[in-house]
Amino acid sequence: MVKKNKTLWLLGLVALFALMLVGCANNTDGDDSNTDLDESEEVTADPGDESSEGGLDVGIVLPTRDEPRWVQDEQRFKDALADSDYTTEILFSQGSSANELQNVQTLVSKGIDVLIISPHDGDAAGAAAEAAAAEGITVIAYDRLITNSDAVDYYVTFDSVAVGAAQGQYLIDNVEGTGIPLYLYAGAASDNNAFLFFEGAWSVLQPKIADGTFVIANSSEAEALADSPELSRDEMGRILGQITTNWDPNEAINKAQTHLTAAGDELKGDVAILAPNDGTARSIADTFATDSDVTSFVITGQDAEMASIQYIIDGKQSMTVFKDVRRLVEDAMGMAVTILDGDTPETTGSYDNGAKDVEAMQSEVIVVDQANVQAELIDSGYYEASDFTGLE
Image 1 (cartoon, rainbow, N blue to C red):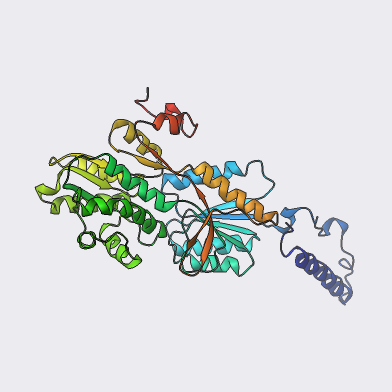
Image 2 (cartoon, helix red, strand yellow):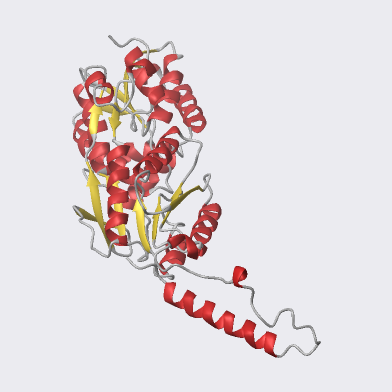
């Protein structure tokens, strides 16, 4: 694909050169030292040399360096591009939509053709997407959907509803009896994925709540909707308002402590815990483990973070949903390269972001627990056995 604005840049360079000659011709101070441009100072551009424009091909903006998941993504993006002729730069927004917008503006100024962005706040990220789209840049939402904006072109993701459904099904498959206290937790209400995860989990948990297998322990809003198989966005929002962790392990600890303090003995014993991701799962698990009235718990997670894999091996966390970031990065970079080559990328579905249906490429997810952790994460080469203790 021809870099945009190259012709305009060359024309501008010619015009600048002409102005320099005019300025020299009009010099009347008697000093003719600048009447000829020294050959060594000529500015030239090789049409096939992208670096001569000082530009980039692909800009990547990730939400934070403070979560292991995104640091892993950074390295895998770098690995994916190691043998590529295309250039890229990766920036982190550190949990700030303002930083995110500034990062995108910085990348736009460097001449990118494709923006890959995992938004901190899906709704607020519309401004960043629109800043890129206004310059003719293709916008790919990565792992998190940009909402309420028609400036996003594609979405590369795992099937987030399937992730939540896998978490909920794991709880169902690993409890016995009825009246089991169910503690619900969710990600940030600013993240569209948090809604999709919860939607998937609710779709399988709700029938078991309705039939008495589970008793909701920590959300009056969820209790009030226990007979509703499907929830509107507003209804889910009210539930998330009570159970959000904001993807913050410390906030997850505070929420769990508050809920355990408020719970009576009938809401303890053997319990089930829907935790949204690995970082919050470890914090919640540690908190529940310190309550002597909680005799056992089954707890979910996602992302297959190294620390949580050790927790699973040690029996401290029950499962994680493995989303192979290698595949997601390959899908995102494959889509970007297809666009740079002037072709239309393949997609497998679409998501309504509130302003348009965004074409999406979806990657599969895998449930990992003690039974298959060796096969899925070690034998596959995702992690090294030496990274953990307790593996046979």
